[in-house]
Length: 298
Image 1 (cartoon, rainbow, N blue to C red):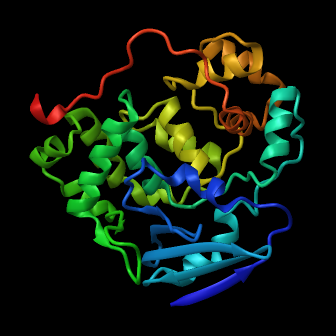
Image 2 (image 1 turned 135 degrees about the vertical axis):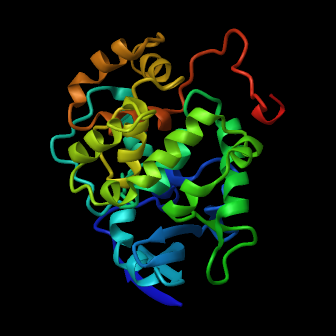
């Protein structure tokens, strides 16, 4: 077990900082302890690791196990948003100002791990979250590694790229992912080294969108998490434009309208959408919800 203590330069909400990396309530790579600590697994450049993060008296305590423990602790501040640059960000809507007052510790962190963000993002393409998260859990249960150290029961580490390339079609089917998403993930895994070495969010965007099956939405979702891009807007999201429109104007809007509303936040448009989520404002639900399919029965 390795350990590191770190004092943030300002307010920090650890759970909010790490929440974007959680894929549903049963995510085998993410757990919240009864004491408020957050457990997270990762496949670092040095190998798998388990990371436990807690805060006491303003000091972050990180404990890590596994071959990747040193890397995980070295990059812990970045994971929690230490590199998050708020320069140029100015709140233009009172509802977002209220969200900032209620959540002063919101930070956009970066994992530095692209495939960890890419695989679940592809699984979430054009389906409801519960359907994608079910596939994620199945794949991790069958192909992930047990989490190193005294991790909570059932935690797993994402597979290496070579494993994603070798998953047979019938196991993708059993997981509930159809051939298109399976092929996108396998293709990305062949280019994992190049993706992981991208130095900037612009470079990563170009590399990702050159892959068949990866578009604007998926690229943004990956760059938000892997590189902490504060401007990567998830255009094409089923809910986001409606939420942004309702929170900022009281009316739903589409992607084009959302981008117009976010123009004053250029450079920080993703940050603005995070604050929209934190307002808790949701448009009234009308009409049937998108169903949870079970592709395994098709």
